[in-house]
Image (cartoon, rainbow, N blue to C red):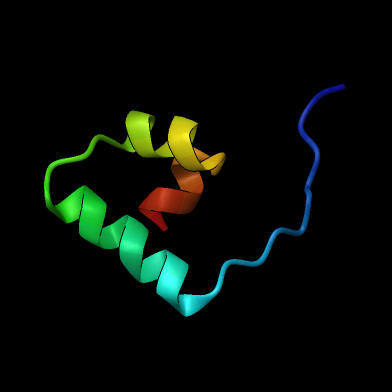
Length: 44
């Protein structure tokens, strides 16, 4: 229960892909839901 740190590590290609999708108009909420990553992680 509650917030748990999962220790997920994302490779550089994945990070670039998510940033590109965001820059091309995808919302943080959509990306978060689709890829299972938190909003905060996307903003970082």
